[in-house]
Image 1 (cartoon, helix red, strand yellow):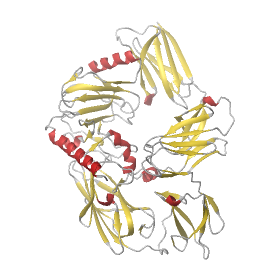
Image 2 (cartoon, rainbow, N blue to C red):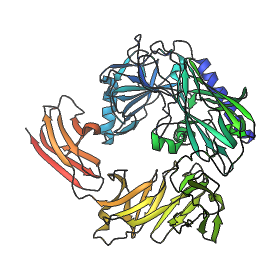
Image 3 (cartoon, rainbow, N blue to C red):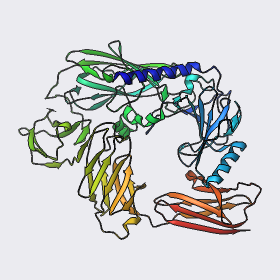
Image 4 (spheres, rainbow, N blue to C red):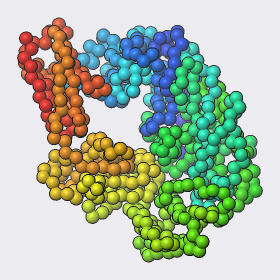
Length: 630
């Protein structure tokens, strides 16, 4: 790390701690059911699938409509209403420079709701992002600002609550202190993983990533057997924290690793910058999460990881093991309340062996681990070499290690991308590598029927991609970016020609296929003879034509409200618009229930006259509903 970068990280850390220290005791009131014991389903810094969790998720007994209170005096600095993300969300700025955030609300209080409604009518839009003038909407500590709900991307009723610093970085409310949350439970350790970090490294004589079960006694965990290793390795830990009264697995904010009693790696999640939220994908082991849904903290700083959580990282946290060396490793886990656990293991240096007496851990043939391609094949009594073909020609490769039944071959992809491999019995296996893509620069992959474009912000680190464009057994057109091993930092762009002659190509869109082959709308469009779409993850994509318009079903009508269920079977709802006697009227939308309902600006005016509703899906199909309301 350059000195200037180190100074910036140190300065940021000092500012964060100073900000915690500067907050007066009892400055904030708990935002829901104050003075009662509350329970959490999520804490600040918890590892989520695509981001670090940015606040507290406070349980509401599985129901909506609990009063939500302002945590401190201030003024409303932002109101956001939308179908995704935080849903109905309120931001309050406070005189001490912090901001509190209240998300997934069912509704705002009467004054705030009226302000938002007027702005929705001005903009003729349900979704709005509003920034009231300073002190225009003043708030008192303990004032009811709304009711708890389940709007936006929430998967169940709760209140999402944040405290943000002067730079809008998220602080940890549990470190500030609330008597409403109790926690005397130490963090738990689930699994430890050790990964070889280069071709010459081994763990228990083998290359790859290996998980170890832990034995528990109280709050102490151990790997029962000494682990043999050689070379450069990295440790990963699956750990979680539980709080009193709730079974949810929350994040562990502090992990310290010592090697032979010297601090080697120190992780402390004390604040989060929103610009770094997606870096959870490089802080955790992405492939392990995809396979097991467990999110392992890497106890090392991988290439492309720019997070400032790491207070100390000797050799970026990597451990170098020499022959016959003993490494005693201790991990100290701590939550925001100071509850602690310990994980211990011993690593002994060994030699790199070719012939193994132990069973070889099975691996998927053709698996890529960082810069290494791992190939395995049945061992023969005489012939065990394979032939690698690449752009320059071919070469012979002997096993890197083997036992009586299996050969393991390790290929350094930095030295060239193999096209196919021929094993000793003549079996030929295509490897289909398309390109090596470096991080931090604009890069394009060109093929006869498609192109793939990366920007300088697409990748955390160098990747090796395998792409394909073909017709499957059902003659469906498939565009595939294989091996979902790599997290994307930003989107990539795919352009392709259709392999099939179709009428009206402009009516087709791109859909991503899940593991069961079910499609979800990915977008894109057809122009100048090419389909073009952006994606933020690898996988299989196809072309489908959605010709079925959305459905509209009236649910109820009263003097002041009319409601409908709107659904679309394939591409999904894009937008809707309602008019009464030719004038725009607000329709609130709750996509989880497929429900829209009217709201008049003037509540005293009943719904009377010609009502029109238009609903469009993402493919451009339109449905219309008209009704004369008398």
